[in-house]
Length: 429
Image (spheres, rainbow, N blue to C red):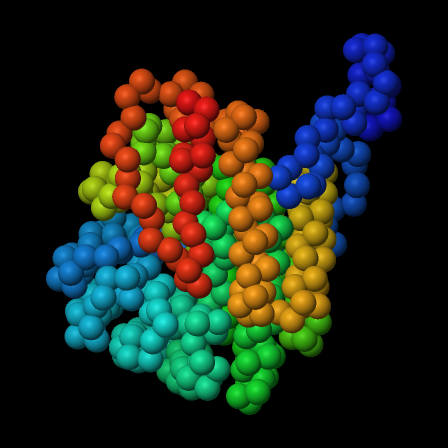
């Protein structure tokens, strides 16, 4: 049914003018989600098929216990492990113990080496696996915004020699997401962070193609199912556009994660559904790797059941649903194609605005980006408090007794705050 036909029927049935416009929804990003879409041409490039690697996070614990967790994840069906090396405080010897457990199970590694990545990256490269694999699937997690350009270039060079197919560099939207960013700002930050990386490493003698081929993006998902699909698809399009503008054919590697800010303490088992929605959206959107939080992560260290459910949710989606059987399964939906276009267009414009202001590093230094994040979080907080957005079990159908208040979250990179939607939504509970 065409938009014109639908509009005429709606106007006749509901006796009102402009009914299509009246039923449209405005997202937090300022984009319009219409109640019906015309059949429009699909996105110009068919997005590739992806079966995301299941990468389970091994959080802070002492090295011997972490090695046991790695073996547990391998036996449970994971493809890789995400090692929070800096947060755990493992020294090189401890990290090697954990890496040895991963190597004996042939797992890929997503490393979180922190602000002094040299020794940790060097340790990881000693365990990169079979020479013919070239480090495929490995994410070494070197963040150019947090590491001096010269040291960053040296690590990229070492990685290219030892593991040429590993993704050594990382631009991570998670700190901005946790600080309140909406999807447009997250995508713009990924682009602006990549631009900073290109500039810094070009001065160190690395070509744009070398940089982009060794780069990965980390992108948290949304409670909004369709918004999450559109965000991953838009990231893919934006990465391709940025590469083409640099004369490169490099493909963007996207590590999707669940959103810590969406997890609730009051009704933790509802997190199982939120995590499933986010995982499904990431798969339909075309992520290369996927990591889910445990449903009980907001209560403290995840338990064995929480870790098992995080892993098994992904295994069921991969093996039993057929989500990854077709390239870009969301393609051809006028709603999702148009929403992807609109999100990518808005993010590209915001990226250009960041560049005109001097780039991401300057926006972080002068406080302008922090102010933007605070405004976006305040807008979300008001929507949650007014129940314009529903968090089930928190601001709707809430349990009578809430658990004890959690300890305040520590600040993230660049001293950005870490917010949780539950804290805002409880005002309306």
